[in-house]
Image (tube, rainbow, N blue to C red; front, top):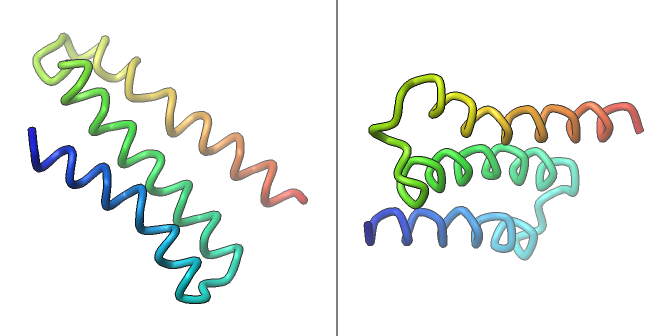
Length: 79
């Protein structure tokens, strides 16, 4: 469980560190999009304890993050 907390903290800190290092805004946007999916999978598996749930429930709970990220990516790409 401690590893999950540390991984979530690293995922949260990474865009801030990249921004302070001078990363381009478009790189930061895509980095955040990717990390949202990673964090969502970890949250669903570990904190919602869906690791041992039926496959349908697990897929349904993990599918929301990629769908939202995809919608935001399309909006970002069109602007």
